[in-house]
Length: 242
Image (cartoon, helix red, strand yellow):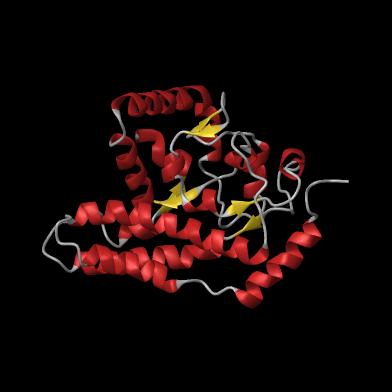
């Protein structure tokens, strides 16, 4: 007998989330209020902290939903099947990721930058080809991208671990498997996985609220607002100049 629950059981338990769980909007609002009311931080520092704190809030919301549904992820360290999907983020998020890498300890920063340079040298042809796919407009684009087997630019393929895990984008956090991991191993687009991408609304809504407040101040915010918030592209395109 399998030690993993079935996909049908996952769906049944997810019904509890729909029936019993309510997103904690205060969790996101409190982050915005805290940053707005902290004068010792510059506007740029507030945005950097918002990036980390709001991503953590998404993690906490997912954990709350999992507790409600009695679900435990079967995704484990070294499982990287989802790291071959196309990841779309905004220019603001990409810039914040780059800045986070630049603020890492020197040895880690050097390792990541060398890895990124080697990545584009090794996969340049695939990046040039797949970097133009229309994820939003072409219903087959995501599958085609996955079949190409191009790893994420931040995936260490020797260890199957993310080089910037604490700063990984929201799409990487909201894609979860609760059934047999072989579902991901054996299928390009497994039906068994669950997505919490609806949390993007709370995440970016809170970010926008903070940015609007900071934009109205006299201090620079380091973001071309609102353009950087709505300009989207693949992560493999944004990190070419990391």
